[in-house]
Image 1 (cartoon, rainbow, N blue to C red):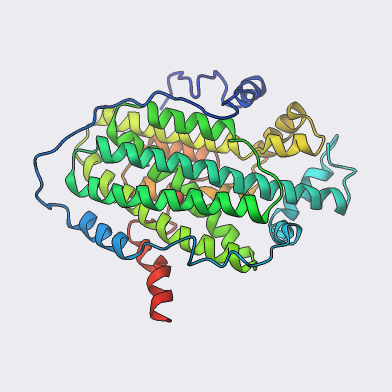
Image 2: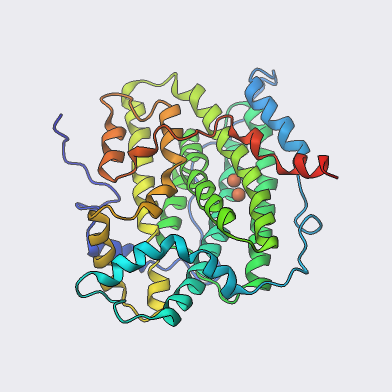
Length: 375
Ligand SMILES: [Fe+2]
Ligand SMILES: [Fe+2]
C-alpha cells in the first residue's frame, strides 16, 4: 500500500541531521522545566472492583514495597571506572566498526580514550535513568487523576510511590558513587512532554508504561546482567521488579481499552507509538557524551546515522526487545493494514515481536519476596 506523506517528529525526513541537531540544542532549563499537562481529572462513583488482573497487580505492589535507605547497602565502595568498563565488551564490536569507517572521528582513539568514553557513557546513562524516572513519577501521578477506572487509580497510586523510590536511589547513586551528571537528553524530554501534554488518558499509558518503561526495562536488564558491582546490581534488581509490574499495568489496561477502539483511533495510537520509538532512537546517540570527548555533534550525528543505515548496531536494537512484543500483545502491530509492523520493520526492530511480553512476566521479577523468603 502506498503511504501518504506524513510528518513524524515535525520533520520531513526523520533522519534529517539539521532537525536532530535543532532538537538536541533545546534548553530545558537549569533548575526547573514547566510543561503543560492536559486532560481532565476524572472522578468515578463506580467503586466496584471489576478488574481482577489490575486488582492482583495492586495486591502484589502493596507487598513488594522496598526501602532504598535500608534495603540497599550504601556503604559499598564503588570504583566508577571499573563499573564503566564492565559495559565495554558489549559495545566493542560497534566501536571497532566505528573506528574502521572512512573518516572516523574515533580512528585515533586508544584504550585511554575509550575508557574515558565508557566512564562518561555510564554517567550519561545513569543520568537519563534518573530523569526518565522523574518523568515516570509525574506521568503516573497524572494517570491517578485521568484514568476512569478505580482499580487503575489504586494501582497507579502504588506506582507513584515506586517511581519516587527510583528517582531517590538513582539520584543517590549518581551523587555518592559516580563522578558527573548529565542534563536530560532532549529526545527523552520531548517525548515525556508529549506524553504529559496529550489530553487522551490512554496516551499517558502508551507513552510511559509501554514505550519509555519498556525501553528502560531492557536497558536496566542489560546493565544488571553485565555489572558485578553489588550495590548497583541489587539496586537494578529491585527497580526492575517494580518496572516489570509497571509495564504489566500498561499492557493489562490498554488491552482492555484498545479492544473497544475503532480503526482510526487505533491508527492514532500506532502513530504515537512509532513517534515515541523514533524519539528514543534519537536519544541513543548520546551527543553530550561525544561532545565531552571532543567530537562535535554534527560529525557524530552524520556518522551514527550512516551506521544506522547499515543496520549494524544490534546492541541498540535490543533496547526495543520489550516494546515490540508489548505492542503486538496490544494488537497495535497488526491493526488496520499492519502499519506499525511495517514501520518497525523499517527501523530494524521487528525481530523482537515474539520475545516475551511483559503482561505476566512480572511474577518472576518479584525480588522482594525472594529476598524475604531467603531471610
Ligand atoms: Fe521507575
Ligand atoms: Fe516504572
